[in-house]
Image: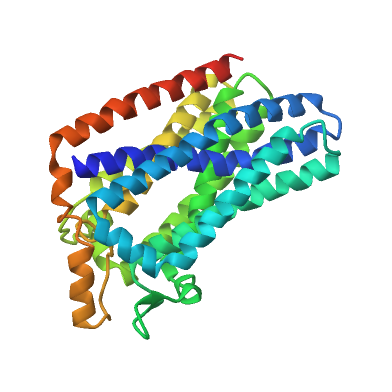
Length: 360
């Protein structure tokens, strides 16, 4: 049950975060283009901004829920990670605050600020959204392999060295382009009956191709720097024995990536909305599957590779960061029942909110 709860909250959070990154880029650029003469683009951008402003908070709520689950299940991990990765974590939190402020300014400044000032607010919204994952991906890179871990004078993370982690250097841009792909394909599906849908489809095809290439590069860095994680995720393709085989998640992701390529190609050729809708749904599934694959392919360890670390420190880390050893208090079934009792109404309210915005 523990992994299922983590997967549920993390997957939903990631889906909304990826969409947020894409929309924060599309909206100001679309409005700016509309100000050059195409008023319809301004209307579309405003509707998308309304959706974004209304749903942004839910992504934060789910992210908080995921953190609370981690804190409850693995308090030692949160304590250690909070100490070691304080700088990249604090950087992302600061950017989240700046992003929220930029959303407020952009939303309430619509038709009130000059076009140039409003666009600058949009650039701030776009830039902060792109940079928020920087700190979090640096932490994910650290969990792949603790590059930048310093033991003196006390255990801490050298942030600059962490940013040179090969897995971070490929994972971060891959995440950004995956966000754009998801957004473009979903927008192509939503506006399938409008001419702009074809532009979104073409943009998505480009970003999907870039994402695929960066995915290959990321897999190669895992092969060299985190072989345990590579074996769990991709070992079945190379005859490598896996200790916790999640290759089925990789296969699922590749299936829906392939469907995206095929569906969007058919949409560009036939302009039939069903193919754009298939691409949008497939993009959503593949993003979630990819994130779950990346998160759980190092099970049971929260750090995939501790080689090169002194034995006494490695043993300490392995005891604290073992996902197979959760807090005993979190094994009570009543805890999950209570959590579901609150989570289901929250998701139902969110679904109704999206319906009402789309209906409008």
